[in-house]
Length: 291
Ligand SMILES: [Ca+2]
Ligand SMILES: [Ca+2]
Ligand SMILES: [Ca+2]
Image (cartoon, rainbow, N blue to C red; front, top):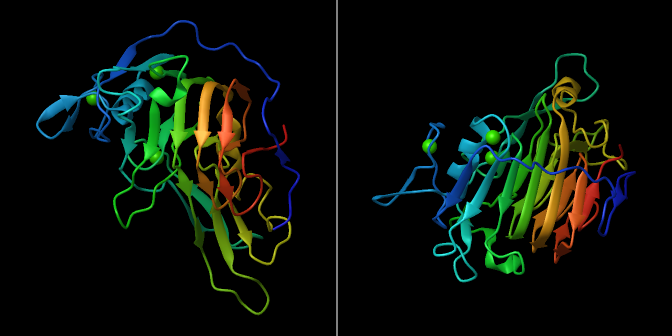
């Protein structure tokens, strides 16, 4: 698959935006487990065994529901270098649906962000702060999917009409992986249609998947980076920026673009590294779409 007009970026993308300075609420994660309640109630109160704990997934669901910027921290007695956060609740938020009759492309993206499964969907301004500024490896968020189940990426950042600022700091993001799905059999006239998912550890923005004909040399008839989705949905959702400060993105994989990070919105990497990623399509480390 040949390179597209997207750009491989080794590090450092120059578009710096102010991070949120005032936090509405601070949630402190005190469990490495992956559990979540059915809907937000203002409390970070997932159930693990017989205990009520604050998991990362529950904290993000609550922070999303609470209007305005919030912060998530970690209790180092429970989350530390020897005790990584383990993501185990599988599920995929992106699929496809048939296009309306007369459309050029047979499939459209069908995406319903759900923080309760698979990747951690962030839909409101948020800062996530690891336990030790000098050691990103002291706060590891990694996939540990049950046997027979696939992992997902770790974070997807979604916009809102008000715009969203997200900062991730002092973290390691490890073992995220997004796959592909064959949507149709090949015909004599056309190759098979596939859905390729982007961003092994982080997808920033709409456009986290691409639908293409396997015979295409330039990502098929789908708009580049948009994946055949509804442009209206993308246009109404604004991401002001995603900042990574002292974050290590380690050993992630994407069948689409961006083995480590796929960004379709402003991205700042500061003292951060993307290592040991693999990819089926374009740009092992970080893929950005043109702006
Ligand atoms: Ca709750
Ligand atoms: Ca919030
Ligand atoms: Ca999800």
